[in-house]
Amino acid sequence: MTEEVGDAAELDKAIAEHVAGLVPDGATLQVGIGSLPAVVLRHLRGHRDLGVHSGMITDEIAELIEAGVITGRARAPTGAVSRC
Image (tube, rainbow, N blue to C red; front, side, top):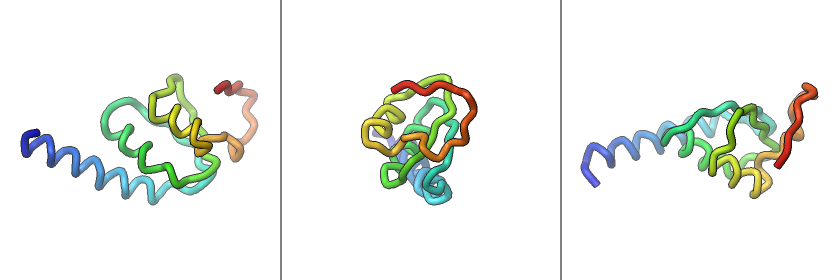
């Protein structure tokens, strides 16, 4: 691993820790793809009842669903259908 790549990974981790601290339980997330969103999602494992508004399910989102972190319980009814 080059120093530049290591620095980028450390920066992603620092950003993810900060962002995860701003997300309350019950929040609804919209995330994209890439290394930073993946790291942010990994830092949300201690949260509860998150919702997701997304056209895609990443591996990290699937892991949070399986762990019971993403439940959608706090989302306002929109008529949208969720299937896991």
